Length: 444
Image (cartoon, rainbow, N blue to C red; front, side):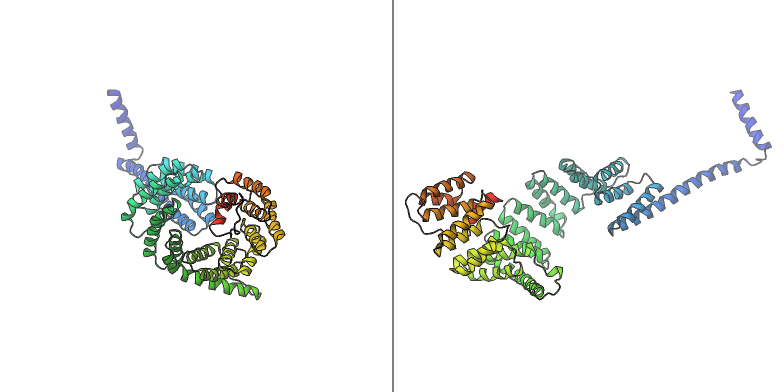
């Protein structure tokens, strides 16, 4: 102890003799260095936050390269900031680099102070790898950290659907709806998932709520109209769809005429698959209400605006048969026959119309042509068997029907024809709207 005290005293004397007459100067120098380091650290932190804000702005604006530069500078200034790694992960994910995104978010999750967004982004990355179990866990973590973010609720619900747990997804969202009275996307999720499950009334109810929340959104009103027609509520479906379909068809018809005149067509004026779907739904609703002429008028406008829409031509052909308008049915059948995307409808209609006009060979050619392109076309097999039976070739017809029933044992038209071939004479079964889907489904 004496030796230690002597050493300290000697050090103090040396300091005094060395010109440090005031010991406080030495201590001030020491603390000034620490304060400088702290100030520099604080300044780097401020600069890092500024860079992060810039990176987020660039990211939101779609300038990925600028966002990447800014976030790299933020990481160099402060490598322990999780938010910087989260933005980097989002950039990598958007640019199609899931492995790099996964690496960045893993580093973010290891740091203290990790945000709810980090868990959310981690879930998005796992979805890219189709690991929905881990994605669901990440979304649950995000919601535990911040339960008031509707996008986290929606992400968890979608993950449940991906895991074949759609009912749980609906129940989960419905349980949170009171917390988000103005969130339209949550209502649309409920509607779409109910439709996926085939729950018609629940689908209609959910779309009604969505329309109530966003009455000026034409696409949502169109979805309500489609749901109403699907649910068999045809009168209301017509009331909802008529103004929407008419407005779109008028626009597309004008665009079609401009194109015929050689004028430039605007992208928003062109026909689209969704508008054709709505128009066909309207036509079906008219047919269900026993208004085939109204259905015909809608479909004729559809095929004028979208001449390559095979499904609308098929419906128009069947409407022609229902109205006894053979010319309309023939034109539609010819357009279907020329469309490589068509199903057995063209063959059915072509054979039916040809045989009704006494052209047996034309009827056989129509059915045979369809089978050459697709030997498993059950509708074409049914038509061929029917024509064979009507020309006395019952053995050939039976053989053809056996082929059809081996492909689709539940095919109603094939079963009906087989009963008829047992010696009964029957009127040619017109290829009605309800007949084609039963046999056409095997070609999907």
